[in-house]
Length: 288
Image 1: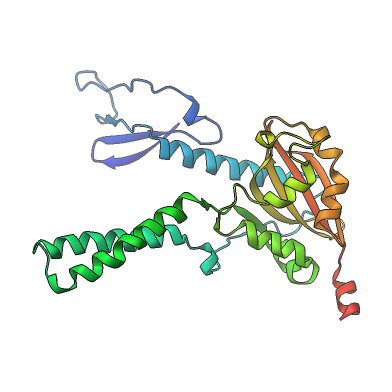
Image 2: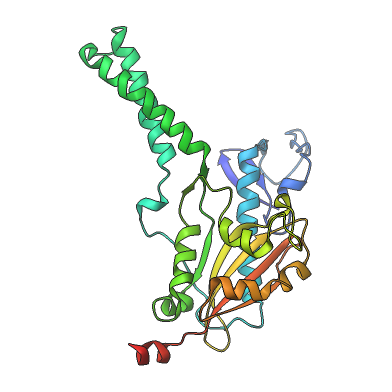
């Protein structure tokens, strides 16, 4: 338990995210130190911070990413090289939500257009044009926002980033680029691949409602120096055996020059699919 000062005489209590499950604990009444009690410490008042859904969601997401990073550092198959995380801060248009842009522009034009039409805001001569273009932009923005599929987090280590250009196959590069950008109309990331591998609704397949959901991807280097892209799925209705008997399908779908390995994730419902590249720096240079 720690504290940070919010104002003179006021202290905010917080918990360590990893040691204490803040989102699973009930709020407790925080004590107030009475000024009548003799104490060598100065009088303090406690500031109550209410829990919101947004705060809970961000804490869960942060804790999930931290646990995923810790699981890779303790894995015996991962090389103990440079394990510095490289932030994915490259700016591309694919990482921009067109739903937010369209909705923001449409609502802004509609708001100003109505204000100008009723002479609340200047520019009444442009009100008709702003209303004409603002309405369809707002509708398109809402439609894109509804069909929007957000990108998944990507953990990239510096040793893997160095091998990405030379050892990552074109399919691995495409998978990484597809899942780390906004998509529209798809129910989930890698939908076509999972549909073929798990055969939704077919004999020997699984129900569509039990489909795994991609939560995270990770770039790392194995002990033998090969580049590896790890897909972390969440599936409450599946077991490890469901992934193991489809390991060959993962290899054939994401091939060539790929070896797929499946394993258990950090949490109970998490499973990892390792897409290991069989390309090496020497083989790439010889073919070129």
